[in-house]
Length: 89
Image (cartoon, rainbow, N blue to C red; front, side, top):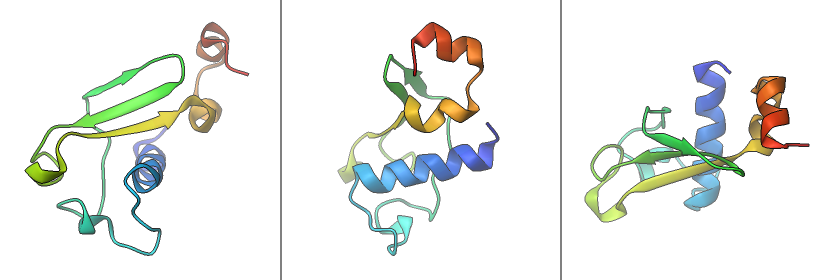
């Protein structure tokens, strides 16, 4: 997956998880009007999560920002061997 596509998926899931309407700018919650993938992530059997520490992308009052992306949204970009190993359908 290229970084622009991943960023778009990440921002979409951020809006869903933090109740930011599609018509609202991301900087109503974040410092900037975008959310880029970082190197602080983990994955489990359900998907991929990106974590941002306080002050990294938003104010301290927002706390740690965690955005989860289900594998169902990432499946078209995953290697077939990984999909099989994770048992994704």
